Amino acid sequence: MNPSIKFTIMKKFIWLLLPLSIGLGFMLKPNYNVTGFVFDEKGNAVPYATISIKYTKVGVSAGADGAYKINVSNNNSILVFAAVRYQSTEIKVNGRTVVNVVLKTAASNVKDVVISNPHSNKRLPYSSPMVAQSRSAAMDGYQSIHEMEYNTEGYDYIKENIFLNTANNPLSTFSIDVDAASYSNVRRIINNGQLPPAGAVRIEEMINYFSYNYPQPIGEDPFSFTTEISSSPWNRDHKLVMIGMQGKKIPVTNLPAANLVFLIDVSGSMESANKLPLVKASLKMVIDQMREHDKVSIVVYAGAAGLVLSPTSGAHKQVIKDALERLSAGGSTAGGEGIELAYKTARTHFSKNGNNRVILCTDGDFNTGASSDDEMERLIEKERESGIFLTVLGYGMGNYKDNKMQKLADKGNGNHAYIDGMAEAKKVLMEEFGGTLFTIAKDVKLQVEFNPAKVQAYRLVGYENRMLEKEDFNNDKKDAGDLGSGHSVTAIYEIIPTLVKSNFIKEVDGLKYQANTGIGVSTNFKDEVMTIKFRYKAPNKDESKLIIHAVKDQHILLEKTSTNFRFATAVAQFGMLLRDSEFKGSSNYASVLSMAKQALGNDKEGYRTEFLQLVEKAQQLLAKK
Image: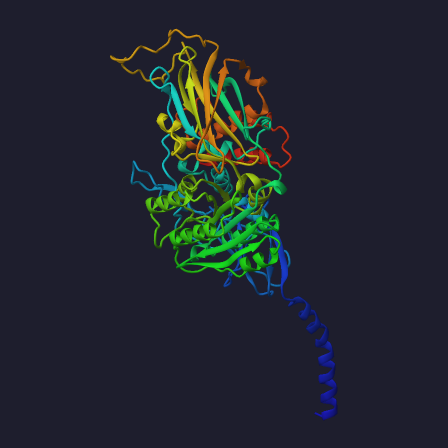
């Protein structure tokens, strides 16, 4: 062929290919978003499914409506879709920006989790969320593709409080509890398509997750208290007595100078996106609220512990944030060594009359050095004598050690929260900043004396791990719970009035050497149901102050009670249903929803409305069992 003709043909061919090449260039654009929905075979949304890019560590979670968005680097990426109780599916992107998928139902995928139970060595069944993610993390765009072969989450056995005969046990003594970790953890489990193990359900923490409209204190004491009495909705022959405490709210600008030590677990188990990356994002919220006279230090631990940021003024926020961002996960977990170094750092830079606190961020999976429950408890108990408080923030799923986190907070003059996403981090570390990080009253104890002329038996709903001996009430060396700025505490007693017959009351033989103090005892206080005694210490004091409050029998019709009473009662019912309590009586999910809907009050944050959605999800899960 003539060379000139050959060149002309090739030139025409190149010009023909040029538009196609340009088009392919646009199709191969890097880092573009793929969006879509995840459905089941019936066309229903699959909430919180995980979508990951095969052969990479990139992944996201779908929202409650099944919607997702993921960034891919090329059009040949393979997306892996997975969710609890569904078969995983792989789909090649092929340059598309919209990929919808239908997941088929899989055989039951049940794993075991060890539930710490001093009365049993059995392993209780608990479905393992293989690549699932919590509601909040999903809604906030946090990624999680960390697959777990087995679910090793740890929960302690809870022996539920029973009815006690007033004649033989007129005193009930317990420590307050402002922790709310149980509720956010239970929410995470339910949103992942499972019902929680009984040990995860601490009813008092579920009740105290919510704020209540109690009056601010007006006297010299840092809290007010409110009582209310009405019929029990799950047993109309019984009554409920609600005790509410409201801590004085101190504006953040008026809080004492803070000496904070971030103690961060950077071991290998913290690698997942809903762990260390979420820790960093959470703590940045704290940093943003720091003032010039506040100080922040950072201690980390993995195979060993180390100080990565010496005390730094809150005026240098970016310096603190940069130190956080440099952290990465890997290695074993020397929790005990980390705690010792964190307290040493806090003591070295102790702020007199200030807020000295260690903020521990971990999944609780300690495995090096002092790691047993007993060792860790003794270590924390020793350190709390230094006047340094402890906040325990729990993260993650699959290996989360709820039981260990709870013990550390209880022993360390501290509080415990579970962070399942940025929404919860915002609630705990921004909306409740003062309550979470600043104590206004420590070692707060309650002792209730019931009047046998009015009450033949009673039980405290929840607080099982906060019960004290009656002798502990006047013992100022006995540790108890702490109350933070603006925090409220709610406790509910279920009482059986005199003359009411009940199978819950166990007869006890009369005492030979004691006066009979049963029904019919002579009393000048026949209009009183009980007397409540409170003891508390100022944060920098070692001697407690006593407050006494008598409660008169002023019964209110259930429908006329406050929204505080009805909503707290609804949450208590929900907790008893989740635990399948022997005391749940006529409780059912419909009654929980009905009462809660009528007691939403001023729900500007939407937490009470979210509770309704959670109850409905639990009801659906129960129906599928």
